[in-house]
Length: 239
Ligand code: C5P
Image (cartoon, rainbow, N blue to C red):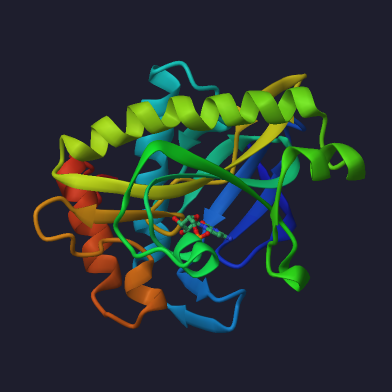
């Protein structure tokens, strides 16, 4: 497999084409951003930690029957992934209230949401990723509704798997964001799953172990990501 030209560079990752039109290389950079790119910093080791964290989670999900784009770890900061036709939509599941739902609905942080809440956001930096519903997606033709229903189903199936995986490590999965795309007609999980795109709290102390440490200037960001990984059994020093 030969890595070729850069196809796209986002806020924390870049993707490259390969000599196989169905596969891409995803590079996890140390860049860390929040508030629609208004706060940006380089955090040493983050690319490596998120690359290995994502590989671990994607493989867990695949083993449980969730189709994902992940193919293989290539290096500390690179993974080989399937080339998906991405839907411009973020799927969020919330098990506990935190973040934007508290601001939008005026509810306190940490309320148990039973059943968990599902929300979708349009990927549009200029608009600040507004919340949308299925009706918007149909009316504006952003995606076929049958693919959205599948993505929603997969997002909830992932919740059952991930909630248990984190709970067994003494961690509460508060919420998370997934993105999906199409690969040969099938809805497949793309992008990444790392502490950059979810909220994780220590079960006992409710200490934040995710990107909120960066957003809120709490410090110890990568140390917290590595602690989550250590509890899950991820070996960040493995070649
Ligand atoms: O900001 P909000 O509370 O809506 O975020 C819900 C979840 O989705 C959080 O875990 C957050 O890290 C994640 N998210 C993300 N990328 C975005 C927006 C939210 O990973 N652009």
